Each structure stands twice: as structure tokens, then as C-alpha cells.
Amino acid sequence: MKYTEEIKQRELKIVNSNNYKLGTFIYMGMGKCNERTVCMSVAYKIDYCERKALEFEKETNGLVKFTNINKVKIGELEAIEKFYI
Image 1 (cartoon, rainbow, N blue to C red):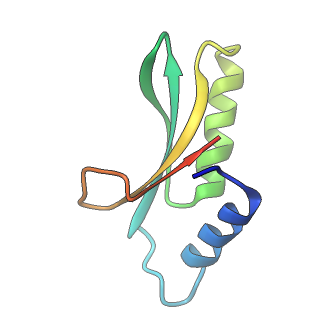
Image 2 (image 1 turned 180 degrees about the vertical axis):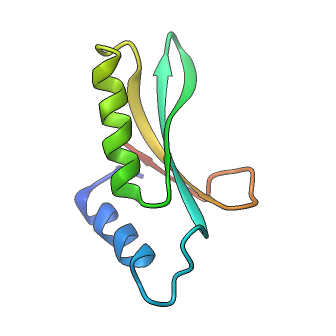
Image 3 (image 1 turned 60 degrees about the horizontal axis):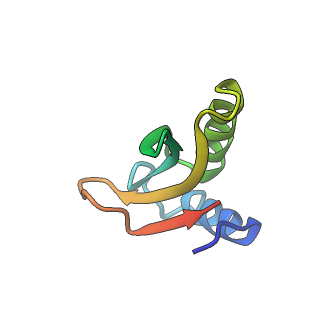
């Protein structure tokens, strides 16, 4: 699924709701470096995950390319959603 402002706002609405327990999900900013998949950022909220992954990409002068954000339920091994940049 393509990452959009609407998806960001939807995810923020979920994690900021009164009945949400922080830490139910984590967001992982993923990227590519020399054709290898790397984790660039991990956060409880999608906006922070995005910001840190973009900072990481900038600091590497494009050596690491930000590709997607994985939404992972704590305790699970696979992403329940992937948002492509």
C-alpha cells in the first residue's frame, strides 16, 4: 500500500486514541543499502518513524534509500501492514 498523508493521519488517530495501549504496535522504517534490506528507524508512532528514517537517509547522502514502513504487532514476527514510500 502506498504511504500517504491519509494513512499517516489514520495511524496517528489510532495511536492517539484514549483506548489505545501505547506499544501495541511498532513502526519500522525500512530501506535498501547495496541491495540489502536494512532497518532505519523504529518507533511507537508512524510520524516519528518516518522523520527518523528520512534523517537517516539524508545523513547517508542517499547510500541508504528509505523504501517503506512496516507496522508490526508486538510479539509477532511479520508486518501486518507495509506502507511503501
